[in-house]
Structure formats: C-alpha cells, structure tokens
Image (cartoon, rainbow, N blue to C red):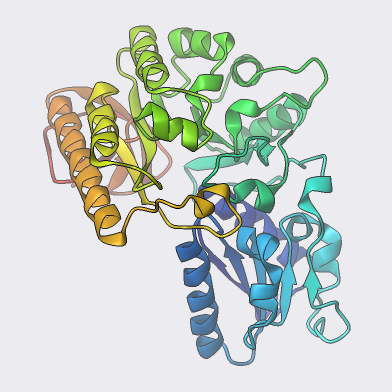
Length: 419
C-alpha cells in the first residue's frame, strides 16, 4: 500500500462502481500516489453537471493532488473536462481498465503524459473479465458484458460504452469460483445491456445459458443475482432458470422506461406495454415470490398527461416494487434532444413526483405483505441484511456479516422489514 494512495469518486451506475474497484487495484499495483480519480456518468446533462461540480469540490479539498477524470462523460465529451483548470488528465472508458494506462502514472506521471487519452470506443471488440474481490464481505459483482448495440433515442450510453461485447462464459465461471473460494455468498452479474450477453461469442449463447452454466459448474455458490435486464430479450433458458433454480434470486430490475406504446416507439424501445405486463405475469407464474424493480422516465418529449398516466398505471399493472424514476433531461447528442415538443420542466418534476409516490405505495404494500413470513437473508452488516427479493431487513441483535440466515419478519419501518 502506498503512503499516499489515490482517492476515488464514483458517479452513476453499479457498473461504474465495479470498475472503480478494478481501477483501485490497478492504481495500487502500479504505485499511483497523490491522485484523485473521478469516474463520471453521462446518462443525463445533469449527471455531467454534477461531475463538474464534484471535480471542483475535490480540487478544493485536495489542492496538491493530480485530478484524473474518466468514465462515460469523459468518453463522450472529453473536451468538457480537458478545458477545466482543475483537471490534469482525461482518460476514456477503455483506457481506464488497461494496466498500461496506470503503469505510466507513477508519482510524477503528469507532465510527460498526453493530457487527453480517449480513443474511439466503437473500435473496441472485447471486454476483459476484471478480477476484483467484490464490495464488502458479502456480495460480489461480476462484469460479464459491456456496451450496447441499441440506440434508444434518449440515451448517450452507447457512445460512452461502445458496442456490446461479452466476457466468455469460462472466464466468468472461473472468476465466480474464485470469489466463492474467498467466502462470498452472493454474486451479481452486471453489464450495460445484460440480456445481450453472448451475441458476439462463438455459437451465440444467451444469458440463460450463462446462468445455467454458472449454477451447474459452481455448486457451492449459494446465491446468484441478475442486475438490470431488458425483458423483451429474456430467453427461454433464462425463464427455465427462473422456474427451476432456487439459487437464482427472485428479483429482476427491468429496463421498461415507459408505459405508453407511442412514447416507447419514439424512444426506439423494442417492446410495447403489453410485452412488459406479459413478461411480469409469466415470470410470476414461474416464480410466485418474484419481485420487480424498473426504470421509468417521466416527461419524455411529446408525453401528454394521458400517456404519462399509462406509465403510472404500469406500476400496478406489472406490480412493480422498486422504482428508479428519471425526470427526462435533454441530452445533447441524442435524437430525443431534437424533438420539437419538449415537456416543460415543471410538468416533468410533478410527474416524476407522482411516479415516486406510486413507487413508495408499492414498497409499503410489499413490506406489509412480508410480516409474519420467514425469509432467507444475506447480512450486509451486523444490523442489516437483504432478503432474496432484495428487501432490506433490520436486526436489533447483531448478526455475522456475510452470513445467510433464516429469520421471521415481525414488523416494518417506512423502508425496511424488521426481524
């Protein structure tokens, strides 16, 4: 460990958090010191604004450190950060995961290093399976896919992440075996467009094939969890795994985005409202205890009140529990930003608040339904664990971190179950 190890700030998604852990290991292995690394998000214009704000704060707090900016915003608009006086180095999403990038960053690396190191992400054809030890001592995240081949009209992410590319199944299985040997009781598969996994590999396997292979070849893994998926791409083997594999956790986060067919078409999504409802119904038939989260955007350009109501109604029609609500934010460089009929900011804010209120009501309904039931819980710290459905459970009596235990649910708070 260096005397003055770098500070890391992560903005945005879980994949960014995963990659920050990989960068920490690369930085430590190469003796990087006296540096602040900001891993940015580009999903909205607001995310880029927050990144700039965070960089200025970090410069004030660390006046002598070298500030390195990376992540999706650095990839999509490197000049935005290169022109900031606070920034010493801008590196792209591919470069940040390459050992040679960090090898050039000794204690005195700035000065003889090119200030902007951002190459064409679309030319990248492989994703490495970065070996990290996970977060905490309970749950590990394994990146199996990166990039996206789809071009939703609101989304800048393909230009920050590149086209879809998959980590081979054998590499994934070996990494999970390693993590299980280290004592992790739960592994989460993560990626940008997880259900596209395998399309670029020989024989074009599907995500369900990977899930079944992991469960078969790593029999000592107690819990396997899938992060966000595109339900229209769920394959037959994945549905079979949901039905037959108790070690696959009954919680899926769905990339739904909206509940109105015309808006979905304008978003260039590949599903319609009924497809989402049908998927949720089918998954629940196969696994009655299944819970769903979902991403929903409020105030997409041209959205009328009636179209918004279709999104609001989708929350109960799909019986969603965990909502990620995104007030639409105009993102330059996307087709949606050019649509003439933008919804005014006040209406977007009000609609997002109504969606969040609907989500809060669904959470309360879910929590209430668990009282009196016994759940299998993975402890994240001595006083909090999560059920198989990813619901937080609070314990008055300390428990062993990382342990899996059974407990009777005796009550609830506004956000947690009580045991």
